[in-house]
Every structure is written in C-alpha cells, then in structure tokens.
Image (cartoon, rainbow, N blue to C red; front, top):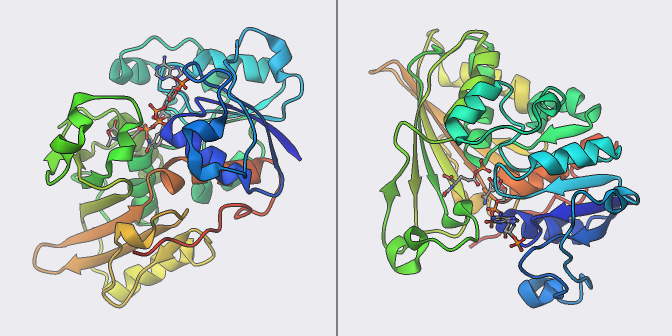
Length: 348
Ligand SMILES: NC(=O)C1=CN([C@@H]2O[C@H](COP(=O)(O)OP(=O)(O)OC[C@H]3O[C@@H](n4cnc5c(N)ncnc54)[C@H](OP(=O)(O)O)[C@@H]3O)[C@@H](O)[C@H]2O)C=CC1
Ligand SMILES: CC(=O)N[C@@H](CCC(=O)OP(=O)(O)O)C(=O)O
C-alpha cells in the first residue's frame, strides 16, 4: 500500500483527492490535514464519504519530521504560495510529493514571483519538479520525486494544442484561448463574487490579460513550439458546479484537411486512455466528461479564415486537479495509469 498524507484535504481539490483515494486499491490515507477542522471527523464535513472513510482531520505541523516518517507520498492541495515549505520538508524526509498548486509549475522563478506576487521560498526544489501533464511528460514523471500538477485551464489548453504545435501545423503566434469554468474552480473559500445570487444566471469574463495561468501555459507551449510565444487567454466564470470548456483559435501553417489533422492528433492520442478525440463533427461538452478524468478534444477548420478552432472539455476537479494528481501517483509508483480513476462521466 502507498502511505499518503494530504495537506489542504478539506478544500475542493483536496476532497476530490480524498474521494478518489478512498476507493483506490493501493492507497492508504495516513493523515488528512486541516487547520479549520482539527479533530473533526472528515465525514462530518463531507457526508458523501460516509462509511467509506473513518478518519479525523489533524492539523499538521510541517516542521515536525515525525509526520513524514511513515509516509510514501505527500499531496499538497493548499492555496498557491503555501506549498513551498511543505515540499521542502517532504523531499528532505525522502517522501515523494505531488503539489496541486502553482508553486512548482513554472521553472522561471522570476516569472512565478511576478505573476503570483509572492517570494518563492523553495527555489532549489523548483529545479527538481516535473510538470505533471501525464500524456506529455510520462517518462519523466515515472522517475520524479516532485511533480507539479498542472493547472485546470492549462490542462485543457495544452492537451488541445500539443500535437499541432509539435508538428508545426499551426502558427505559434496569435493563438487565442477562450475558456469557461464552473465555480468550483475558485475553491471553497468564501468570496462575495462567488455567491449563488451573483453567479447563477450570470456569465462573466475575468482577469483579462493578467490571469495567473498565462505564464504556465506559455512556458509549456513554447517548449512544444520550440520558440517563445505569447498567448491571448480569457477565462470566464459560468453558473455550473464543475467543468471547463476551452475554445482555442489558431492560424493554420499548412493547408491540411480535417481528416489529415485528425490523423495527426491520432498519432499522439489514439493510445491515450484519458484523451478522447471526437470525429464526425462531434464537439466536446462539459457534461460528457463530468466526474471523470477524461479530456475530450474536437475541432474544425474554417477555410474562409484559415483558422483551426479546437474545443476541449475537462472536469476541473478531476483531470484539471485531483484525477490527474492520482494519475501522476500511479505513474510515480509503477501502477496501471488508470488505477482508481477510471470512473465514467455522469450524465445528466
Ligand atoms: N479548484 C480547482 O478546480 C483547482 C484547484 N487547484 C489547486 O488546488 C489547490 C487547492 O485549491 P482548492 O481546493 O480549489 O482551494 P480551497 O480554497 O477549496 O481549499 C484549500 C484548502 O487549504 C486549506 N488551507 C490551509 N492553509 C490555508 C490558508 N492559509 N488559506 C486558505 N486555505 C488554507 C484550507 O483548509 P483548512 O482550513 O481546513 O486547513 C482550504 O480548504 C490550489 O493551489 C489550487 O490552485 C488546481 C486545479 C484546479
Ligand atoms: C473559476 C476560477 O476562479 N478558477 C481559478 C483557477 C483554478 C485554480 O484553482 O487554479 P490552479 O489550476 O492554478 O490551481 C482562477 O481563475 O483563479
């Protein structure tokens, strides 16, 4: 069994992790960290896990090495800026770490500090981190001690663009990504902007030209394209609990038909368990991936404008966070990649 500690276990990402690990055949949860619910039964907070998990929360003092003694793996599901000391302590105690925050996703520390407006306290560890987009970095993840789990918007955009940039099918400059997210993407913390009465029957764009995922996405896309690039990214909040739909516009570099582009995508993804390529005019929708670790991708080419429009859908809390984190765990511990995360989507 893999002995696991979870920091930030009561947040939305943390609680989905707990749900998935509770039925994972090789996972044993050692501690469920929480500042706010110390000594409370986890199922008092999350009743859907009743009789599946009999454990109280504990507030973990990260400076106490004894917490790491019996651990194989630490998941950090804390808000960004708070994982750095935890990761340092985990690695020092020879525990593998998967961090769900943005703290280790960006290799350019100056860029991280600029976009996140915090000083990085674990700069050396950033060099050890592998960007945990499983379909693309699988071999590196298998050997990693520290995995930076990708952001939710980045996962939906990067998987959609990877084959096209690798094969220079599209121009690297001028890509536009327009994404919509359900409200759980904002986490469980109370905020005026996330009140039901302000989100329901409402759609709004936010963080125009300055969303914190921009440097993360650009860094990865630049690697695929082998040139630096700037992405136009606009996120929207929509009145749903979960789900991300990204619509991405790019200029074609080559005069290819839809079936040729489909074949190209297939060479990258036909063996990928969690990427579903849609054909025959079908397009992704959030409900068709809800509750699952799938990323659905569809596209069309507009011959009038010379653009390809790619649409991708994920569940922000699963492939966009906790499902991908478990996929990373499976890779790091030599398990079948879909162990514990092969739930089919819910419908309706
Ligand atoms: N929500 C999503 O769709 C996604 C989230 N992520 C990432 O996962 C991480 C967790 O996100 P999410 O679960 O949404 O966030 P939440 O706000 O829902 O949960 C974070 C949890 O961390 C704990 N915590 C510990 N210290 C602090 C602190 N100083 N301030 C606030 N909370 C604290 C809190 O639990 P307690 O008080 O019990 O200790 C809180 O419930 C973030 O880094 C986020 O970026 C990544 C991809 C998608
Ligand atoms: C709807 C909403 O507010 N979404 C969050 C992004 C989700 C998240 O938690 O960020 P990471 O993926 O980097 O961890 C936001 O825009 O900040």
